[in-house]
Structures are given as C-alpha cells and as structure tokens.
Length: 252
Image (tube, rainbow, N blue to C red; front, side, top):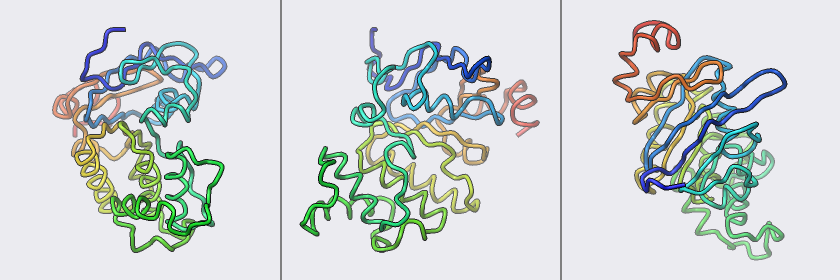
C-alpha cells in the first residue's frame, strides 16, 4: 500500500457482524497525523465497535486497518499498543485497590517490557517516570490515594495517565467526558488537547456532547446503523441539513 506520510490511521471497508447484525459496515476513513477527530452518531451506531475493531479488541469480519502505512489488522492488541496506538481501558483498567502511583507504575513497567517484575525491590524504581506522567494530568499530589476511591472525573484522568505512560502516537477515547459535570468535561478535554499539542499526538474520540465535539474536533465523522455517513469540518457538519435532521435532532 502506498502511504501518504500525513495519514497515521486508515481503515478500508472495515466490517463486523454479530450473528445477523451488521454492527459496522464497510467503514473507510483516514485520520491525519496530529488531527483530533470526533465520531458521533446515535446509540447503536457502531462507534465503540469501530474503535474496538481498530485496536483489534474485536476482530473484523472483513476489511483492513493500517497504522503508519502498515497493515495491523490481525495484530494482537498488546502489539498494537507497543506500536503506539492506545485506547482507554485497553492498556490497563484501573486496579481499584492500588494507589494512583502504583497504577501508573504498572503501565510504565509494561512499557519497558519488565512485566515479570511488577514491583521490584527498589521503592524508587521508575519513580521519576511515574511522577512525570502524573504531572501531565496534574495528579502528583494524589499519588498515594487509592484508585477506587477517586471521583469519577479523577479516575478518568488516571486512565488517561496510564495510557500516556505507554507513549502513544494516537490516542483513542470512548466518551472521555461521560458521567462528569459539564465544566469538568471541558477541563478534561482542555487537558487532552494540551497534551496532544505537547506530544504531537493524534486523537480519535467518541462523544455525545455536541458542544465538546464542535469545540475540540478538527473533523467529525458521523455514523448510523454501522455505516459512515459523512466526514467533514465542524462548520460543514453543523450546517449539514441531513445530519441535523437525522442524527443531531435539529438545527445546532
């Protein structure tokens, strides 16, 4: 496959059946390096399944996924992580009984490939690396708190920190602001946006809050019933009569 050097992620006719249900149907898209792309659509549109197909948490029935010009369709999820593509909840779900520090430390150990020695004898092993990662999400002061006792918003920040420890080139987020207050949602997206700029990351995210989508996405892809309906700039999506009436419930 010839590679456009600006394309970091590409899918070709990606399809997934669950029995007779076609959850994702012939989805072809291209995500550019350092782009922030939103995927929107009604419940059951196939958005989460699409992300799971991209990282091979769910195997496609047909179609291809390319990352940095290379076919990764059948790669194991942990190999996809090592290549630089991470999805929240994919790298490591929170260990609720461990501290914030310990959760991120495990991710740092995984990144180093030292998986058979999760907690080495040295208390300071990877301490600087872990504290740097916690600094990215402003959680250094919470390093000793138990992950399961954090607020929902702080748990989301910790999940992002765990993913950042894997040093991703592209970060996939499934509703990063769900379940938090509107202002906290904006704070989380501001943090993600800042990190994306600082580390030259590409962001692909699913979101139901249209204010978040239109404020932070460079482009928006709309799905319905497993199909990719349209991809365009926020301005054109906002003014697309078909999208307004069928997918977004009227004029925006």
